[in-house]
Every structure is written in structure tokens, then in C-alpha cells.
Length: 322
Ligand SMILES: [Fe+2]
Ligand SMILES: [Fe+2]
Image (cartoon, rainbow, N blue to C red; front, side, top):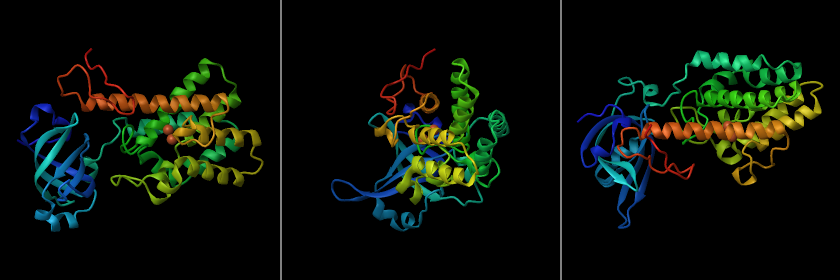
């Protein structure tokens, strides 16, 4: 049986053999309890990621030593279930030539249209009127070679917006949610402009924190410093290049970036101390949570149960009927 996309594998296939083409997103050599080496893999295509094991490492040692991450492979595997999640036991695995398959077609991509997302960015940029704030956005996003990265990078490694254009889609969602709250509560123009700027910049440093897709994972800078510090640092450096930058705007925008995770235990070194920063934080959570629920439900579509499995970041299962 040939399964073209990983998303089509479901519980009905347990104990059956499937064939698929996928990218090796991650691979580790591990030891079983009886000290036998096996290969622990994460495979992915454009539709989803799935865990897989190859139990007989010694038998195919040379192959795995030469296997790089993001290498496309064809597999034959038995579908199994482990702690409620599907898992593949690989029986055969072979390399596929990069020329035979477009790696991007095996990497998840936002289903929002790229040009309309770019127009959306422009729409919010145009709402910022004060020149020093416009210059800050120009220097950090619009008039630099960061723009391409900003529009293509993922916004996370797993769970939400972990796909091509993920950062762009997430920032646009945060801008829309934040703007809706700010207009509903009639924030001043000054507050609105600061909120837009901090929404644009809050996750900006993910272009430094993550590797460029189809590679996944953190850069050294990302692991050592994280996007909150990197983003605030880059923003402060840029602000210092702009003559006469308003001091309140500087403090409020930096606090918004540093505080956007909302709690010290979630990695923010300070709490959000303005209404703009609190709105940004809630818009950020809303964007991440809603996306994680919807993409998880999509992954679990083929299953018959009324509920999804437990979505770990939300701590609960979701009702799928209706
Ligand atoms: Fe963040
Ligand atoms: Fe964010």
C-alpha cells in the first residue's frame, strides 16, 4: 500500500505496511534497555511529522552514518501506536535523489497566500505615522535583507506556525488581534503605533534563533541567547542609530518585546508593564493557541473518535464533532 502523504496514515493502518516519501527531520542513535543500538527518527512531509524507529542499527550502520538531516528518503514501514500516538517501525529505507523530489514540497508551508500576507504587513506599516517609528521598522524589516527571512521563516519548531511563512502568518495574526482590541478599547494613536511596532518586532529575532527551513532546530545563537534577548538587543541597537528617538517609545517598545511571553517562568525577563504590552502578550498567546488547536485537529481528522488525543500545550483533548 502506498500512502502518498503522512497525514493519511491513521489508526486503521495499525499493523499494516505503508510506503511513503519523507524528509528526515531529526535522527538520533539510541540504546535499548538491553544496550542494543537503534535509530530514533522524526520523519516529515508537507502534511505532518511522525516518529519512527529503525530497530536494527548494526544491520544498516553505513547507511545511517551517511544520512544527513533533511535528506529525502523512501520508506516501507509498519504502522504502530505508542502512548496514543502513531509511530512507524521502518523495515526498508532508501535515499532519494534531491533532483527527484523538491524538498520544499516535503516541508509544511502556510496555506495563506504569500502576496496577500505581504499586503497585510504593508497595511499595518502604513498605520505607523511617526517618522522615528517608521524608520525603526524600515531598518529592521522593510528596507533590509531581513525582509525575505522575515517572510519565509517559521515562528516555532513545533506546535504552532512551524512552517514556511510561519513567522509572517503569526505576526500578521498578532497584528490583527492586537489592532482589534486596541480599536475596541479606543487606545490613543500613540499607543496604537507603539503596539503595531512591538507586534512587528516581538518575534523578529526568530530569523536568528532558528535555522532556515528545511533545516529545523536552533542556531547556536538561538540556543545560547533566545529570541527575546536577541530581539530586544537588535531593537535597542537600531533605536540608538536613530537620532532623537523618543525615550518613552524606546522603553515601552523594549518592554513589549521583553515581556511578550507574559510570565517570568515562560522566559520573559520582565512583565508587560503597559496596556499595549499586555495586549501584545494576549494576542501572541491567542495566535499560538488557536493555530496549535486547529493544526492538531487537522492532523487527527481521519480518526473516528469524538475527541482528539491530548494536545500537550493546552493540557486537554478537543471535541471534533460538529
Ligand atoms: Fe516569542
Ligand atoms: Fe509570537
